[in-house]
Image 1: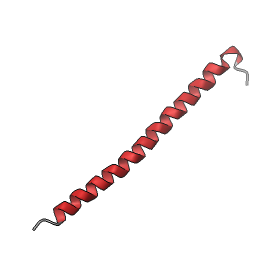
Image 2: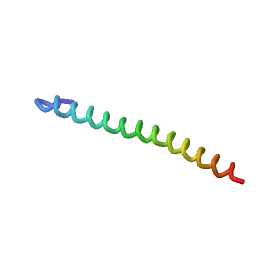
Image 3: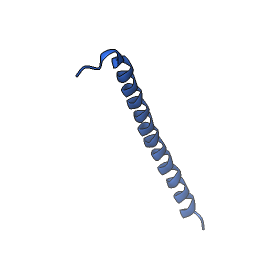
Length: 50
């Protein structure tokens, strides 16, 4: 496959897109863990009420 003079732009664009998608996936994973912890705390507080 020959990209010609545009190869650096094409490769850079794909690399940047992969970086952004990876960052979004990692952020979603971290946020999901935080939300599960917050939910567990709320459930513990609710269960400890008289």
